[in-house]
Image (spheres, rainbow over the protein chains, first blue to last red):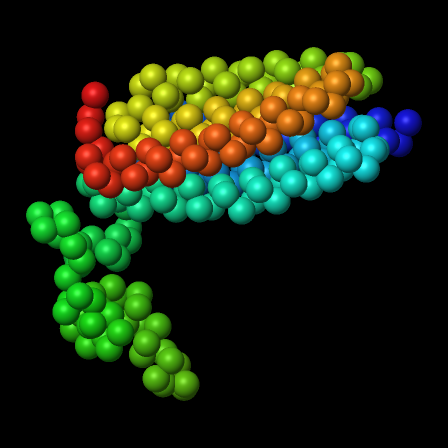
Length: 148
Length: 90
């Protein structure tokens, strides 16, 4: 009976997370935001359903298979999401107009399809002019002056 | 109680499948469709797990393993395709 309640709990939560992932995929405005919705909650929901399967059968070989599935999904899903997001960014898929930060955008030129490494050096040794955000300036000033 | 939960889960997973399919048809660019395809793959893996609980046949888990592997290879292959060809609209 307790096992049945646990299995039902996991299945219901997995269904809710999967529907939320699909709604996020449909309603969010931008490719990276959509991937943020689908990758994490989709993987989480799949892992929950697999845990429910292992709890329902309670046999050694099935539990081993479930652990194999969960490990495989947890390893491959971030790799696949990273590959797709990187390829889409470099292919020039437009970002949402309300995007606040696009740190690679100033250094990537799509014409020779390369990142300008001489400008990337200024990231490692940032000059005061290269930081335009007033919030970052105020943070740096407050770090310099411990009195504020 | 478990039967009701399984029916509820079938319905909501089908709803999620439908929403992901709408995004895959609408998707303005090719990577959007690929992300929708990846979500569809993980929804179908969940459906196989649910079907294994429903019918008591544990062989569905093998299909889930193969499907997870295939979905990963599809994602990597499409990522290479986008890098070479560019994200072509339409």
